[in-house]
Amino acid sequence: MASADDKVYEAIEVARNTGKIKKGTNEVTKIIERGQAKLVAVAKNVQPAEIIMHLPLLCKEKNVPCFQVASKEELGAAAGLEVGTGAVVVIEEGEAKNLIKQLAEQ
Image (tube, rainbow, N blue to C red; front, side):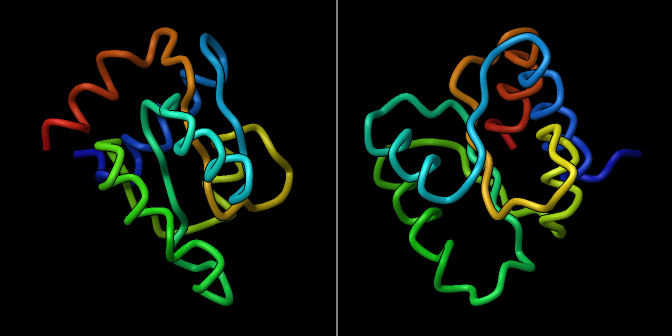
């Protein structure tokens, strides 16, 4: 069975291909504050952790599903990057709408 992390990566990949995503902590923060975020993924292995600590709280405030995934490298790969990224936000779900809905209901 696919792990929760795999589902989050998959949702990001599908949204990247059929919708719209943004990468990087600053971009993600701005999108959440503007109320445009549909799903946020944050990597647990970001150093120092302070860089991304505000994101889950901000998501809770704005009622956005926020998921912690194990690896910024895998998160970066899901977002189509050759490097890791600490955070990714889905702005337009595209064909990932159902995946994101399933994740949000968990």
